[in-house]
Length: 196
Image 1 (cartoon, rainbow, N blue to C red):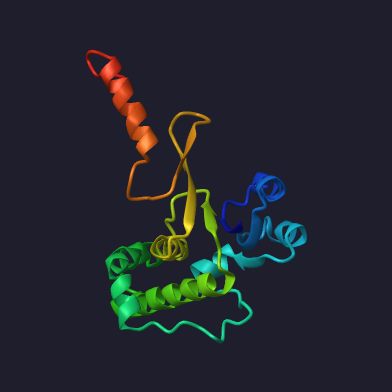
Image 2 (cartoon, rainbow, N blue to C red):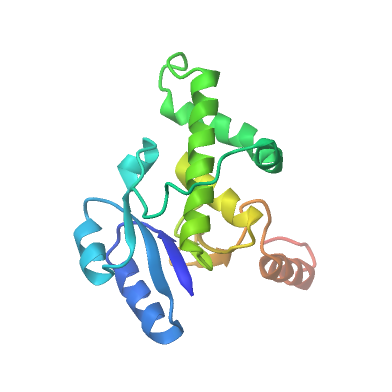
């Protein structure tokens, strides 16, 4: 499987990737890095495209071979992704601390640039899946997420809980995993008062 890693900079994720490569043939093809782990990722997975996290937030993406043969946003694509645009534009509030320096035209243009970039990455690299270690709360992460959703690319997202050491997996930010709903329902019905 060809995997995009959108993970934190904890060294253990490199170990996870190595283990998954050895056990399940997960091939890291793209890794969003930080200064803390970039050199180790490059050394460990020399064929993976490394994208700096801070650069990605700024919309400064790593060049990918064959990117000149790129997808151009047209009416069909914009209509396909229209339901995500409002959320993406709203997410950019975090990028505008004064609320007056990043206007709607600039936000829309950045949204288009991020959408076009990820559509091209998916076309060129052909990932089978993407691994997130958090909910996609940055614009570049969110756009990767929606492009994967729309292109039926598997998503694995780690979701921490407020219970120490308890994490669960999810493939969508919009839905609670069915297995969690089932556990909740079983627990709720096993207690007469429905109290925790």
